[in-house]
Amino acid sequence: MGRSVVNNPTLRCVRCQHVPRWCVCEGLRIVECPLAVDVMMHSREFFRPSSTGHLIQRVVTGARTHVWRHDATPARESVVREGKELWVLHPLGELMPTTGVNVDNVQVLLLDGSWGEAADMKKDVEGWGRRVSLPMTGTSRYLLRAQQGPGQFSTMEALLFVLSALGLKEVHDALRVQLELHVYAGLRTRGQSVMAADFLATSPLRTVMPEVIARMHPQSPDEKAAFSALLKERTAVARVLKDA
Picture: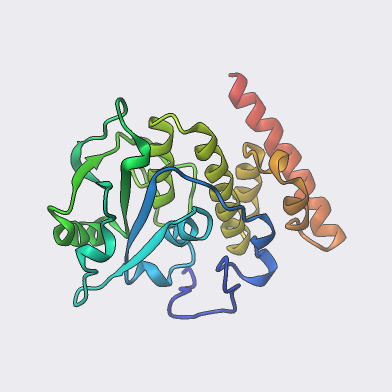
């Protein structure tokens, strides 16, 4: 059974929320985003280190987090930004517009929590703005939690989709690197070496921040050699699959 990081807390970096051995603060980069980004975070999600809602606040300029509780919903005036068109992202909304959008006038509100938790939050923000959905299908590449399955995507992935759909490629690519780093550190923290090697084999991390990734490799000579061999093998497999 997996260890609960909520019920059995361990020492973590106060900034990136990873354990000290896999701290990624060296690789954190602030990303300028023309969209106003807010995260409505369920109180249970607040204590989950894997939460990408926390990551958004750490790396996106001007991003804000509002903690939602059953007995304390954030006030509308503390969330909705004056002069912005609010988009509340939820699967039950209208299809997100991608043309004729002035991104400087848009505020995106992301509901950060499980499907049931997001449904509860959606009720409380109903009528605050325009509810929009994202046509995201398939299986996520970013396995943040053991129970994650098909059709389940992280909060950061939803933001990445919005950025891509609006043609904000540079912002999208910069934030994707931050998500890749967050997920890789999570895999290493959980001791999932094979999954970490598979992930790294197709990640831009080795090109974008090789020094950071190199320092996250195992430290003992034997472990370092074993992981290097594993990474080489998984990279070769990834190339074959890509060319197939």
